[in-house]
Length: 151
Image 1 (cartoon, one colour):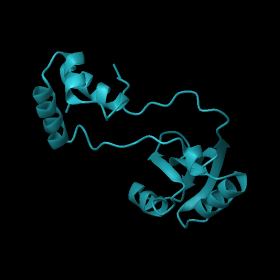
Image 2: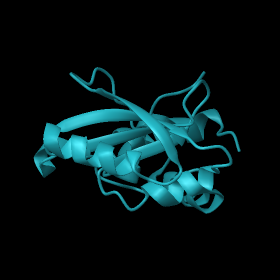
Image 3: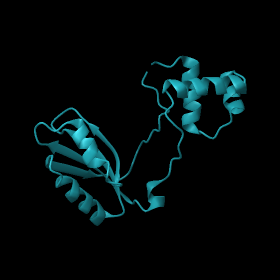
Image 4: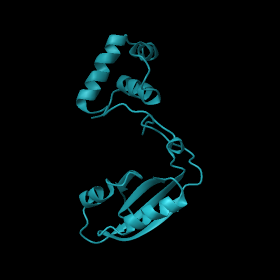
């Protein structure tokens, strides 16, 4: 499903601040508050909007170290095997299969370097993992939360 221009503007407004009122969004996009609500309800029903959330600085929760782990898996490892193996780690913020040499890339938040190392060792020890390669984030430069447009 591709959003039309008006729905995309509504989604962008919500992505910037999901607590904005429908009246405020309506004033920005040229609709009444009830019209915005109907569109948001429709977008939720169609699955374009999957939920509303809060963005928290990981450091506020004690997650001071961020890194990415490239996973190189044994042959015949399915994406579902990878997902099942990683979903039990609370330190894993995201994981995706990728193109290139690695099979997947995993974003990890940890309390410190020692914690990151322990998580890395546990992930490397999963039965489907052949080897890993990791990098640590020095400074996050750009983070978008669903408000960017691909076009």
